[in-house]
Structure formats: C-alpha cells, structure tokens
Image 1 (tube, rainbow, N blue to C red):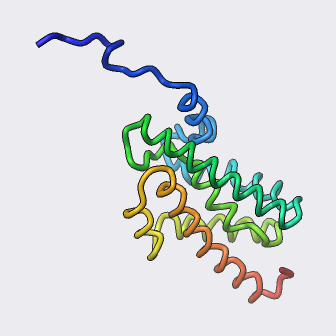
Image 2: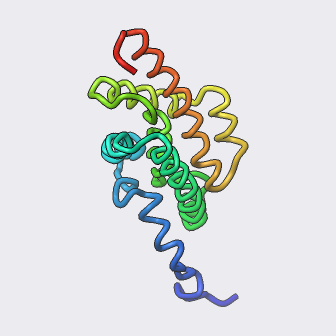
Image 3: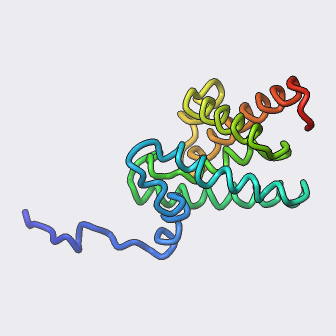
Length: 169
C-alpha cells in the first residue's frame, strides 16, 4: 500500500466554498470557542435587525428572503467542506432565525432583548417541529430551516409579550 501525500489527500477548496465559508461563519464569529451561535445572534443579528427595520415591509421581507437562500447555499457548501451535517461554526442560520424573530416588530432595547432571549430559547430548546426539522432535513436547507422555525416561535412570543405589555406594535 502506498502512502498518499498531503496534496493527494486534501482536496483544494473551490472558489464557491472559499466564498461560502466566511458567509456561513459570519466572518470569524463562527470560530468563537464558546457559544458561537449566541455570539452571532448578538453581534450580527441585533445590528442587522435594526438595519432591516429601516426598510418598508416589502423590502425587508424581500431582503430576508434573499438572505435565506444565500444562507442555505453558504451553509450547504460549508457543511460539505467541514464534512459534518451541522457544524457549530456555521452561524449564518442564527442570523436568519433572529431576523425572522424581529421582522415586523418595533425595534427598541426591550424588543431586541426579548427577541434575543426568545430566539435563543427556542433555538437551543428546539420544541416540535424545530427538532423534527433539525433531524429530518439535511444540507443547507436543514441547517437554516430549523432556525427559521425557532424564529417563528420567538416572533409569536415577543409579539404576544409586547402586545400584553401595552407597548406599541
């Protein structure tokens, strides 16, 4: 049996994967040693939610839709590169999920704090069908869609809490 050189074993990264990795990791955030998903939600998700709130609903929903498809593609290529089904370092899904949480809600310190806590609760806790999506769907779509489902739950909770507190919606 011959010994293969490192060049034969390690496949060079193609240009699409080289582009997808920093998107999927949100730069270096995906490489944080502890809680990269929480870091991504706080460091990128909160500012992105503020910026998204500046757009009218058709634009903000359209931008979120584009981001969803970009995130699915980047997560798929990054997962293949990492040879894992849902690597910790892929955190673009947290960005999409948090934006689903916040879209259409008023942006204030109160709503952002509620949204952050609710999204992390549902993303980590994975109630049905979030857990089912996480288990059954594979590739980039599976990586991102469970966070979208968690974001829908979180959105409903934050909306209810804001409505119940009498804060303007």
